Image (tube, rainbow, N blue to C red; front, side, top):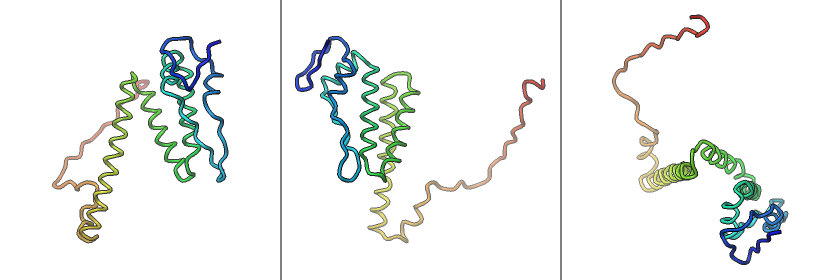
Length: 163
């Protein structure tokens, strides 16, 4: 049976790692004094690389377990938000046609979140520097349209079974 040693770099080739090796590479979850679980420690890069190349299913299971462990170890007030973010990431990964596509999708998600945070921070700075009255007019998310518009009429399509 093949065995991997976490403290030694492994070669990139070799048979797949048995699930027992993966489980022994990770410390067991331990309860802390406030009832939260400690997150699992991340195995070495060499082990992760070898696992991803030789046994993608086991790598995916390990990834899911590490993510769940991290969310479980978070304070209660953050768990819902972290689960929601992970749901969005998992959705992007499922809808992507390639690993690169999912990486780009997660990258765009990260940047849009960062830009929203930066915009909010800039608004706080403006409020602090200029006073609340001065920046209250800029707090709308988008300008209202001016002028008139044309209303389009949408006629219902006949159902296929009625034609």
